[in-house]
Amino acid sequence: MLTDIGYISPRFIWLILIIAFTLIEVLTLGLTTIWFAIAALIMFFISFLPIPLVYQLIIFLAIAAALLIFTRPIAVKKFKTGRVKTNVDSLAGQHALVTKQIGEFDTGEVKVNGQVWSACSEDSTVINEGTKCEVVRIEGVHAIVRPLSVSEQV
Image (tube, rainbow, N blue to C red):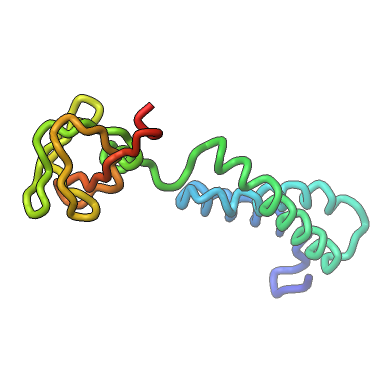
């Protein structure tokens, strides 16, 4: 490639791309541009072969796409990036015990993992004290629950 400063080697281009993609990955931590950095690293070594730059770009895109498609899901699962469940988020699906009757129009209380929560019934039914139930979701400071069937209580 000719410029006013002279010929720029493809190896130099790949080196710049390695640094750029790595910096972007460090700043974003999205496990996306790292695959492009790895592909650029591979292309840095391939650039020592007498392959025209156009074909190098095609090879780069193929390697980056393959890495992104096939290895990113494994890496995301391994590093568990993304949304981390908080204590409140982890309550959904947990079993709870009604400690104060939940009325049709009144809130009651449930005990979940040793913590007492104000609770409302999912479908506005009365749930008596001592009934086992499941936390459907958390809305504000209230646990929304549904009673467990007999087969689910085992």
